[in-house]
Length: 122
Image (cartoon, rainbow, N blue to C red; front, side):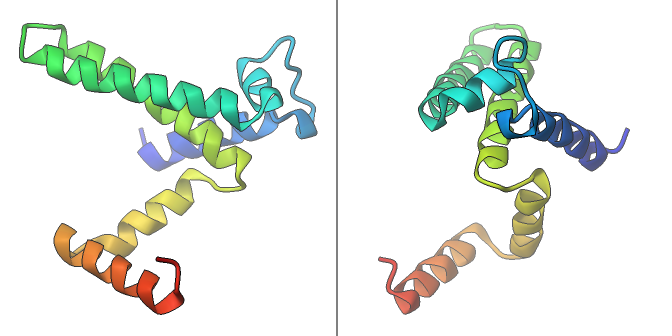
């Protein structure tokens, strides 16, 4: 199974559930989140991020490894809802990760900061 294809299929479903595209908040969780606005799905991202951290920490204490995968899937899903709301897709994130490929983490961070200073976004 191609990971990018799976992400793009999920992104298409999320896009189709936008209220502007006919998604019904009464019958679709995604449509309900998007209808409620950013506070709803951003809160879910925060909750899922916390649950992901806790699941990772619990692995050191004998927790079921699949629990981390499940929580990470929830986090990714809600992040994809946010991407859709703001007009982005998983491909935009993949493109950014590809752009960073080959750069060391510290090097990439320094480059980002330098570009922010040049553009006055500090």
